[in-house]
Length: 116
Length: 115
Figure 1: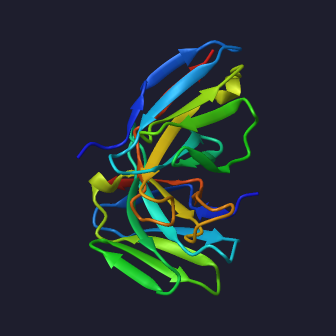
Figure 2: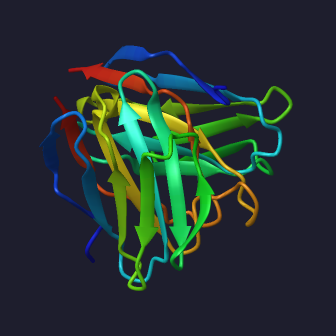
């Protein structure tokens, strides 16, 4: 059962453009939503994360938009640069301790290519 | 500050063999998680350890096992290797656990190839 669905699988944008990656989740108990960036040969690195008590979080050129009622969240990369070319993963988790928590459920990833 | 260290980086094994992968977390991190990454299935959770106790386990067969030592270093073992076990195995560490603490840091992984 795929609990976090990510789209698109791949994305090509021009330098300076806006990259948008979308994710939808099923478990309404999820309350922590991070995005990870992965370069070839490296492990995923935390980019930005949001909790459902806010609808938007911005860090530099990266913004997460969160829609609790639709159970969707998205990553926007403004002024995309060739150095942003990587695979991006959304994820979801339960932040409270105990039980079957203590894991991140990942989307299947989006390969972003930013052309110069 | 040293990151999460995984050894070895690359490994080639034959079907039926067993393999042990090692993970040294960031100093002070007591939670260690393991994930399997494949092109088809993406990142899938294997298990999580905190203070030598397994707190959660993913939907993998019993051939996959792990443990954590008193210094928080962790190992995972795969017995009776199958071709489908070929993957990048990632270890991540944090102070208290994924989701509970933002500081969830991945290592660069061990690339396992089963032939």
